[in-house]
Image 1: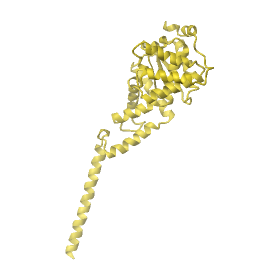
Image 2: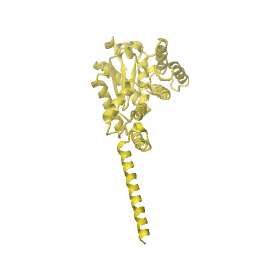
Image 3: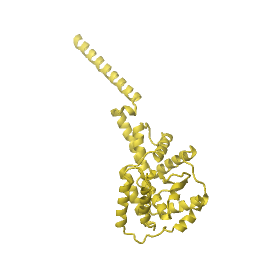
Length: 282
């Protein structure tokens, strides 16, 4: 009988010690887990965070875009061009396009960046930027509208959100959207200025921009003409230098033009009217 009790006592102690040891191991794993280690526990938590980022609401995206815009401006990563009449002109073009875009249900903000380079970019939440250099390079309003339409296409496709999601995984974001808002804003600013869009995203933005241009009444031939002109100049500008090859994009846009069902879209082709509207840049 005593031997049986002794055996039960030893078995009980082993079970208790085993449970304690397992608890300590799990406790250490939870408290020391880092995203860069990519352990199974990290991946579970990271998957939740990535899911939350990929499925943010329109309100969250607009709020984050506002924060990214403030970061770009306040840190002087960009310098806004403050001429009131010219900003009103660009905003009017942008709002005309946004209203017939594939994503008209968010507020859009269109701004001019004081920069002689031929460039345009967008960030999440409806923020679009065009440089003074690009405006000067365009020959008419339809050409300028074609670039703005392309950037709206990036917003419609939520391409900046996807870029941020990928960057967040790479950089090991450790919390949900609200917890790390400041860090996400920093990543968003980096995405807006430095990270090129993917091949598929550029084609999608071209297609959506082309369609939006026609629905707004602008001559879609201007989009093809402007890109052809920039490619012929030699080294493509920044917004054309990302994947895919700019010449292939021109070819695809020419095909879109040949198949377009909007021959009545002919607005914005007057060079004289455009020159008058951007007179402050001269």
